[in-house]
Length: 325
Length: 141
Image 1 (cartoon, rainbow over the protein chains, first blue to last red):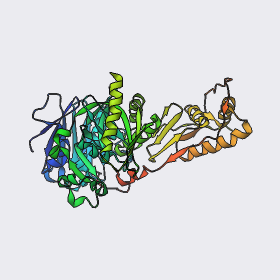
Image 2 (cartoon, helix red, strand yellow; image 1 turned 90 degrees about the vertical axis):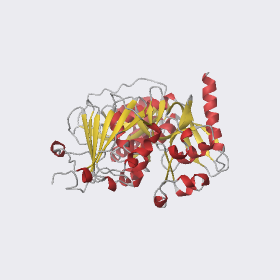
Image 3 (cartoon, chains in turn green, purple; image 1 turned 60 degrees about the vertical axis):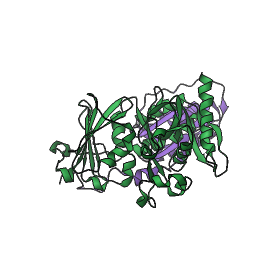
Image 4 (cartoon, each protein chain N blue to C red; image 1 turned 90 degrees about the horizontal axis):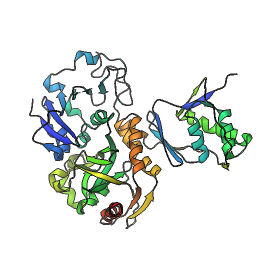
């Protein structure tokens, strides 16, 4: 067993404990900006087991199940206070014991996990962990300042990553470009992963970033992964109050234009992919709707002059923050 | 012949209303929907409890500038579409009483369901469960 790793996500401390011969960076690099040296007594303990190299088998009582929900992989009619989930594709069995503050993920063989999992490890586990709390994971980017920022919402290909990467050359800081944790109550965005992901064609827009691509051997078939904690740690921000929901839409025109959007537009951009990518239950829709109802929304028609993109977001934020002062 | 009632499906279907627009999702199929026509929003809200087509027609005729003869076929078509998309289910009985109050009638336009199926690929490309796996790990061998 290797040394445990400790992390802080919002008010949750969590520990990753590895069992077997596991490339721990696969699970830890995306969280590196949230890592800390010590843990807390109430930390959530997450065991990552590689069955192939550790020989640690799934307990017999967890194999005795009958029904699975093919949408989520959750085992049905399981014990109260626990969640059991079986991803038969990646061959990962997840067991969550809420009362003991402990979870275990058995991997039949960690080496068969798809390379893209390195960019957002444990996302479905954290959805399950937070599902009955005030937190929720959403499919969105997030950039801003300590006093306020924006969520960038839209399905894949709308320009969330291009927008966040265009902000690296500005005073705006980065909390995520794919998944972030939100608390609709405050409302606040929490950074989950420090990984930016860009399609090869969009990577060409940022030639300065090319040396920082972590997975050149996969870029032809998968998105380029860039771990910001390695080359721009000062740009990362762990959380900020959300002031607006911004919906990027690439126009191909030179200029970037901001237009008001409706709550329905924001919901339609944020909700479907958040729900379907994480295979959440329908209660998460209410959390997302609660967030959307509290915030103004804007279309961000992004242009080819990338420097205009952060200026447009700064202008949105300046308008909202100064208005509330 | 017994009356058929319809109501919003309780499994996998969720909706949220913003002003006069409703966003709906069916997580089982991966499709999501908009309804923006006032008549469609009114029908969707009626379907939150089991209702029959005649009850829906009665309510719509009371709220909108239309007649039962005009409204019935388009409402039946809309209900059929909601059934096809698995957003509503039929049920044999109902104790719903549809309140009909006299209000200033609004212009009637046909109810429309806008369907978006561009997310269905997410369910196919990133599966969590191989439905054909009969003995995959950690199934009982």
